[in-house]
Image (cartoon, rainbow, N blue to C red; front, side, top):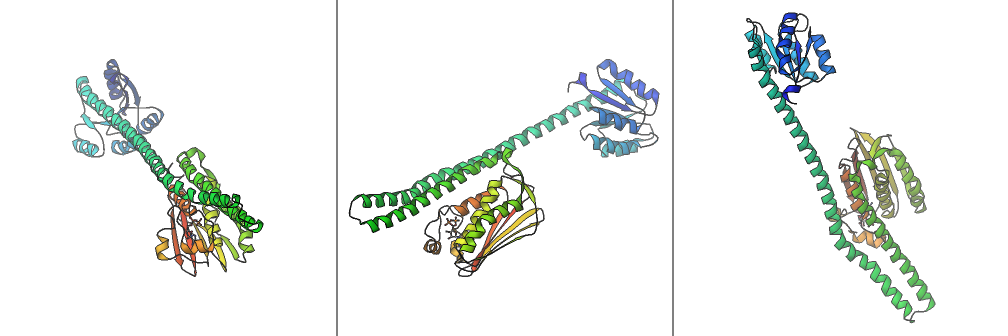
Length: 383
Ligand code: ADP
């Protein structure tokens, strides 16, 4: 705003005062509009952009003080100067307390008017500059946060590179040894078949690890809010349980699903699918007999889901490590030979990205309960 472009609104019930001010200000290159009373003034204020309001303190209808409040509701940054009569210095003081920038006692000369208007407009420019500065700071803070998020994920991925190479070498090395043994010619047909089976298991493990690693790498994309869309959460759970129920039942496990709410949240459907697939798949895998139970509810703007089993359970010591990449407990390894130890790492990352929480409650030999919450309104928060 340059001073020549400043827009001034005069609200005064006296036509003489309105016109006098207008005529005094126009030659100084201000754009001036007038209003006869508060209602008209507020209307004009809502319609246009004003830098300064000259406001009569004593008007019929809405009083100057009330009007002051309403004006600041419309535009908190507009500068108000009260025009007061001789007898209303107290009122002027009160007006200043309520946010008026200055006051001008009647009668006044053009010079006196300009001596109040000019600093008032300078204050307006200062406030606008401050707002711009705040907006710029907020923008750079947002950018910084996004960059930090990306850097954090980058760091995880790079740290992984080392661990990954080590972990992938393991099944790849075993596969190579088996192949060498088979080519050596010392194995009979039965032994060869057994080694082919083992090769298959190790190759599957290798592939699963690669799939999980790919999943983890793709989590970075959550930073782009473009990928988020409203997701009917219960539908995702329904899809996952439809796939896994036969697996549980084939093992002779009772499989229960209890859906209490039908919330919708902004998310990438694949993330929610991954959460439930992993937790339910683990519950089935690490439960030799009994039951797997899944619940979904909504409370205080959050999704709450539990995945409960009557399986091998997790010791207190193991509980601190199960979310670490590639970690598998000894009892888990003894029970299920092939696992990547990456599922819960990814689950944890997804929950964090949506600013949710995940808790595990477990008693070895009796079973585990995984409980996760996701706020419905984060919009993939990291985004
Ligand atoms: P994976 O299942 O491939 O080993 P995860 O990251 O999904 O990898 O799980 C890590 C470890 O956490 C498992 O190896 C197991 O020790 C433990 N775990 C996870 N879920 C359960 C569960 N429902 N019951 C018992 N142990 C579990």
